[in-house]
Image 1 (cartoon, rainbow, N blue to C red):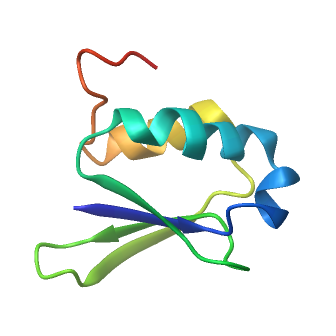
Image 2: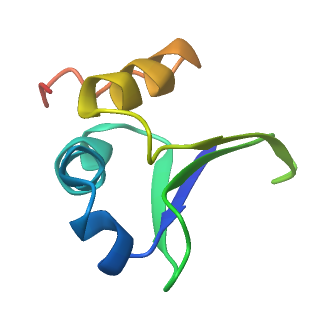
Amino acid sequence: MKFKKSCPGCSLNRLPDVKSFFYEDVPKYENVEWKKISGAPPELIFLNEADEEVERHLLSRLNRDECNNLLQSKGFEPNKDKEL
């Protein structure tokens, strides 16, 4: 299971690559949920089967490709019918 959180506006407006990743790429992955939390930094939070946090990555210094590569390096692949 995977979970991402970010403020849907303010901080993402200054990070166009990360914003594109959240709005355009994340919906193409299975088992990836984006939770919009006002004021939260853009992060990837990896959870185990018991919904316990096991890893966290701040995305503000990554570009869109790096965000996708990070997600895929953890075993998440986009749906075959939805290309990135």
